[in-house]
Length: 185
Image (cartoon, helix red, strand yellow):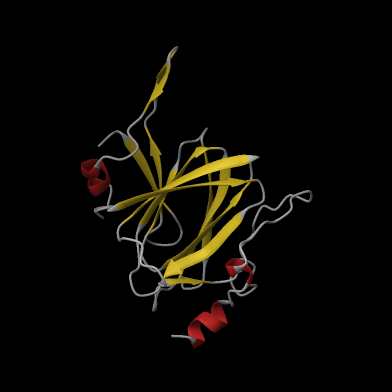
């Protein structure tokens, strides 16, 4: 191993990964993913799809999950800064409905591993951000679910600046809360 440092979180299954960065006067080099290193660190998932999005300051995406085809995700930011959040939706989990957030940025180069059966979302803190993530299953149209980003039953402490205008998709303004999620099961 040695190429990555893996931190566990208070919610079992979530992991923060910090890669080793080799820098000199020319710039830097780092491995962003190497299967054997991640497997040795307790992340043996095989990723089948890479996605990338760009967003401006104040964009809040989430909290999303897949209903029938859940995905493990390995997320990172290659430009800018976001506050990334995962909410435990695993039935029977002692931390069901709890959230954890981490700052991901081009500077800290951290990655966040979000296992299956978590809702996921992020808030863009910089003027612009590019967000990349690997998924362990393919995208299935019509399989997305969501929970309201501001559900008081979850209580995510989003770092929304006083001068920040939140920008949500129409779909993300219509999700119900954790109670509605449980009633739909």
